[in-house]
Image 1 (tube, rainbow, N blue to C red):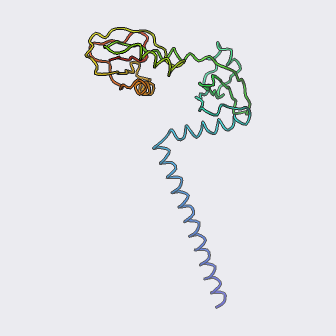
Image 2: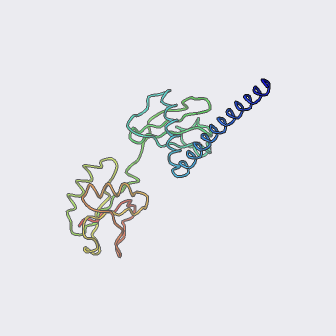
Image 3: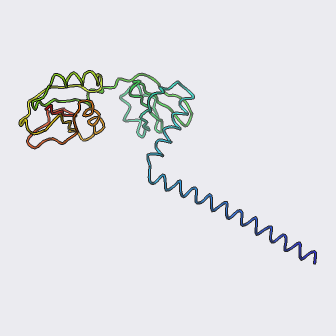
Length: 216
């Protein structure tokens, strides 16, 4: 009888242990499924996490700018960088961190946890942010002053032309003619007290302009 009771007790304990294991595995499976679902919903979280980890690693080797998040790139084909002295020693797999505001670039090799190169970079911000003003009957001088005062070094007024139809817009209108500067267009419209819009029918954007401002 005692032997039978011991066997039953051992079986009960085994069932309890197995039950606990199954429960723990179930909780873990649910947790990882939720994590996977969240990643699929917001892949930017993964990229941001990878950038944060990279910045943390590089930050142990050198002081990094604290007020901006770097643009990160991976060297895929080092031969395409052969004509740029700064990247002369870069290898495939190296990470490039570019701090736009600080005008600083870093080449980091994760496989050896070393800095390959660090130095200042010349960033021609004006080249990609040319603003053309189109006079639709507004105060061009005031708009030009606001742009120069608020965006010195980041936006450049390339010139002024007259609108073909001064009634084509109802107020100051900023147009992202390149289609790649929606954020800049929105901020500029807010600064100028205007709105973001499309290029009015019959109007054309001056050659080389990134943003067009109709001044009404």
